[in-house]
Length: 186
Image (cartoon, rainbow, N blue to C red; front, top):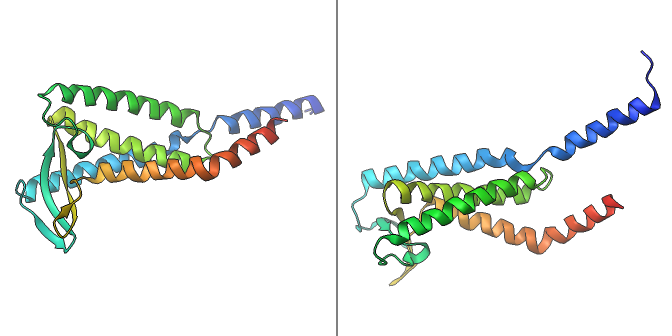
């Protein structure tokens, strides 16, 4: 078979296109693990904890089952019920946007993919609670003396860690990434 330089160039071009199409959707497995771990720990909390009864683990850490009908820090929890569907709609829209962002992000930017997937997993975990239960199940309570941080769950933890990764990416990695892409495009 006669291989011409033009064919070799076409093959190389095709390889480059295939590599360029790899995106961060591969990180969806992490979102699935976050959702599974979140739902499992919430099941354990519902099964073994009594509502609003603190179970001390450490001097600054209790397991306390609470139900949050609002958003972060119980925002709008006493709003009369409409907030359930409002926060559900927000979570669905944000989840779709996160999946699209993962799809558009090149796989080599794994730090960004990791953060987005953690946020997605946390959002879906809390979305499940909100749709099925009508409230989000919280059970992790941190405190010092008589100062209590609002109770939270594994989904909230994943969202927070994912947001930290996005902030680190934005502050320290994005400029390098943009500079590298500009160099590659020249």
